[in-house]
Image 1 (tube, helix red, strand yellow):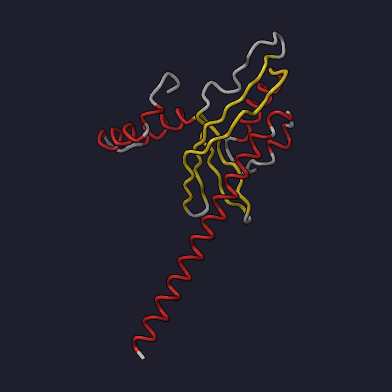
Image 2 (cartoon, one colour; image 1 turned 45 degrees about the vertical axis):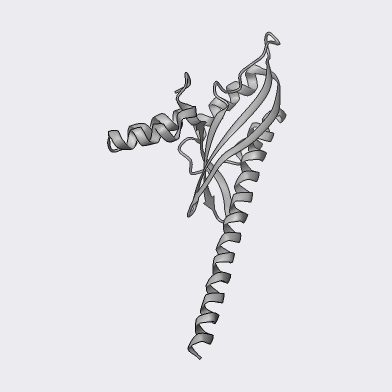
Length: 173
């Protein structure tokens, strides 16, 4: 009888673990979709649609809207070449995504190539609100690293962070 309970308990534990894994996979899929759709709207130059992916509670929303308006006004054409995810980390109701985002764009006044962002390395931080993932912050990965470096609590922690993010130690940092 004890063996039967032990096997039943093990099976329930495995089922619970499978459910947790599937929730995580569902969240990761939803997060990737939000980030991809967010960047896919840039070529449409639809500022309200792009802003709809943001949390209204984000303290960075106003700044992003201003930056976005400058990008959209300064470009004649924007083409999203690719979004490549390198990290998706979920902790409870928050997620941190690191992606390489490549655009082709032309400057409105001159027709010359235009850099949508100075760095193609992007970090998107999201928060889950009423079951929906919303953007809380969107910045360059290099700027994100600089912020995290200032928040570290010692030289060892800073050295470890720099060692794990060697690709971001570049001119954009």
